[in-house]
Image 1 (tube, rainbow, N blue to C red):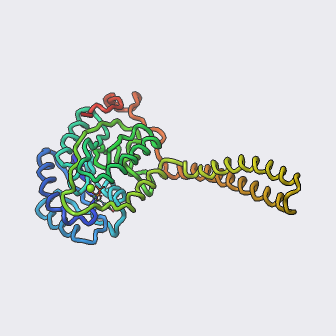
Image 2: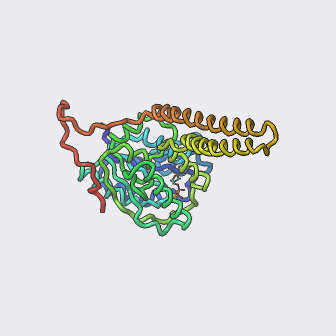
Image 3: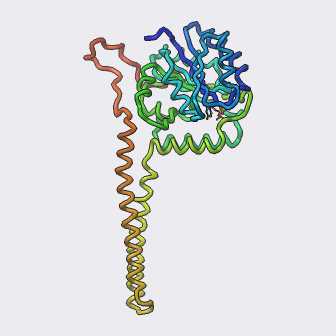
Amino acid sequence: MSSIVLSVVVPMYNEEAVIPALVERLRPALDGLGVSYEVVAVDDGSADRTAQLLFENGRTWPELRLIKLRHNSGHQAALTAGLHRSLGEWVVSIDADLQDPPETIAEMLHTAQEHGLDVVYGVRSDRSTDTFFKRHTAGAYYKLMRRMVGADVPSQAGDFRLLSREVVDVLKVLPERTPVYRLLVPSLGFSSGKVAYAREKRAAGETKYPLRKMVALAWDSAANFSAAPLRIATWLGAIAFAACIALMIFGIVVYSNGTVIPGWTSLFLAVLLLSAVQLICLGLLGEYVARIYKTVQNRPTFHIGFDSAAAEPPAIPQQRTAAGAR
Ligand code: UDP
Ligand code: MG
């Protein structure tokens, strides 16, 4: 085990404006913890002076590490890079813009250690500083995700969370290309707790999540956890097939009345039947593609938390709990 107790992963994209404020607030919060730590600042291919400023700050703040991605790869990819490179026994991910208060990290670490938890989510209790648009799109997003992934997904928990080394090691071996950690972590089923915090205003600069990136995150979230879009073809096929039977009867009635031009009935029926059959076959293919996709994702189907026959049985783990909630 490394000697670093806590790693703090901070993804940053064009955040030069916020770096001075971040350093000023994050450093005392971490120094005050009284444990060894590192800050893993991931520069997500910024076009501004983010990397340079981080590097300069690293001269006077030896715990500050800089990891620079070659090009802008997105928030979740930057988080992945940070998780893979972090060395601590605990890893916290936090936004650079001080919307997640760094002082909450102490409470997260304390909650995890006191209750023996593997995951502690930072849950936004107050989003009044977010825009009307952000609050409502986020509300709809969490509602949908809880329906798709399950009730284990805490609503209003973004990417401010604490993970144990064990969780990070599980995440590191997953081959997923587009992980969405706020859904992936709860789906692994580790013992977890929550710490509530008030979402603050962005300290400087502007949001790095334009609508385009929000839509991409929502689509990744849906496609990572649900084969529902692939099933659309099956459902359309079934509906088309039912419609086809009704229209067949209609076609035959019209034909027997003799009011149609020759060839219409056979053509009409052939088009209906073939398109229904095609959609059903597409849906079938989709079902198998979904299974291949699941296999490729290679998520653990179970995770053993305790085995009394293990060589060195660990202390009986806490129940899966939200004991840390307050
Ligand atoms: N971010 C990133 N790469 C991106 C977009 C965002 O690393 O392509 C980082 C950004 O620097 C910040 C965090 O992700 O630390 C959250 O972004 P932001 O605060 O702009 O999102 P919002 O709070 O507006 O949803
Ligand atoms: Mg923000």
